[in-house]
Length: 383
Image (cartoon, rainbow, N blue to C red; front, side, top):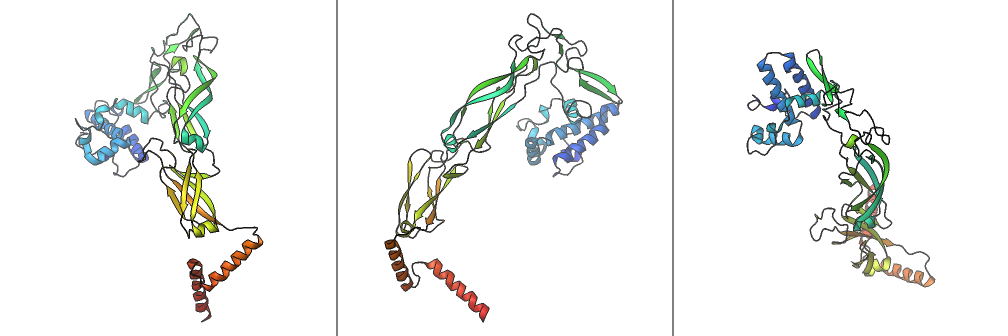
């Protein structure tokens, strides 16, 4: 049935329905067609499986996009969609949706095995120079590690854990509530499936202890503010020998005295004298690579004019930029008005002012245009 009926029709939703609408529709329909509520009704069971299959596809963004484009063909043999044939069982889907309602804490817990350790977060502050070149960072992390005396088992050396008799090592126990068979975490072993009668003195049966660790991590060049780096297996140790979680490093950039950054592009403001702006010249801007970038200033350059130096910006984090994987350096000009003039400098500027007036503003077209517009506005107001 599910291969013939549109998934959105099965869930009684519009194609543009958001995730919360899909979830709400599935909860309602699953409660209505669940086999426990319709004992002996084969049609209801098939309906329940169909809506579960539909929800499993539509709740996954990638599968939903494939279905929206190709329909059921996206998940047929050779379609490559990873669709209904990949389901782990409709009871798992139902339990994930109703986990909190049924006491499962929002989803199925791992059975008969130690739980994975928690992930850790480390906030790393870096300078722009460090982000440009990359950095070998030494991190001090307070985390849970495997207990050495018991080897992470939680049992006293020379002893071992036994299978929980309450759940038979499954970590969960079932009980009937009305029409439903509800599974809960085993209260005796707390979901581990094992009982430690003689716990380790060092870790009190947890299999892990708190310890400060020193980690050496290579931070790649090109990282930016907010970059997240995952270091697999360097998080907290799991309970009673469970696998370690991961460490996530979040990069925070310090402000730089000269450069500002936008992705791989660096921006710098360069002040120049009025003579350099008027006559032209060259300025030197120091780069993060300790080399100097020479910027040629044409005569008549105004404040705000930008010059781009190709390939002198930041490296791309994944080397994705063409031309070597570096961005550009953008230098913005700021013409600086001279202060504390000498007598001779003032005389020269006054002479220039006289010559400029005689030229009728030909050397300063923007200024002349501004006053022409201002006179025009004034004449309109006084007419």
